[in-house]
Image (cartoon, rainbow, N blue to C red; front, side, top):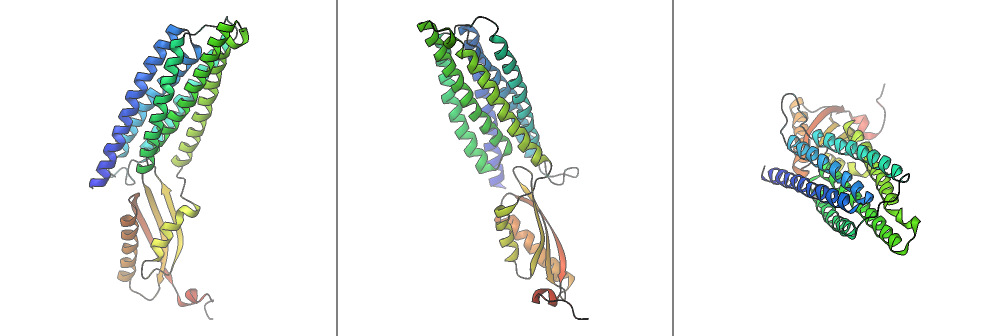
Length: 308
């Protein structure tokens, strides 16, 4: 139990870190963007505000997901993380629409002239968000946490959005200095680019969350380790059917195996119990295993047909 508890603490720490960083960046970019007159930085601040709300959703998802199975939820609460990832996706989509509408509207008004402080704030955001991406990605991958992986992708989208804001601000400042009207619009263009980037990230995250909530199963090469473990158990003649359902941080295995038709029920039960023990002991992601035992007759092992 020590390892799962340590992983839960690490996941909670990651979620809390995301919340604090997003709070600081949302407030910081919002204040500097408003004071400096940068539409791009203010748009990026709206993105960070959506991230802040998403961080709260991730934190709640992590806390709920670590609850053990109960009578009402025999398969655990792992999908809470998937729901929180879906909430993050919805907030990203809403933020993208808000930023996009504001960016398009800005083209019908005189360009705002950002200050140098906006460029500095955007640069700080780029560096901070890249560090947060690396932290969340590595932690989420190690813990198999969907919500932390969603947060990592969100941080990576922030890197590009803040970088776009930085480029737009710098070009706008250059346009003001060199008296080039079209360059002065680059701050607004950058805010529109940020909106499109956030829209795509939100759509991709929503699509992945929906697939997992609909009980997407593990396929292809990812099934091979499970198959090898099952077939290595003495008494298993062959696997009739194998399904591994992904619940986020853990998986549920449903398998049908064939055993010698002439052995006793007790022996067949013993083989099934060994299959379950091997799967759960060899893979910490396996929360539960349901084994169905089928009879295997001699002609099936020999590849022939029963005689009349």
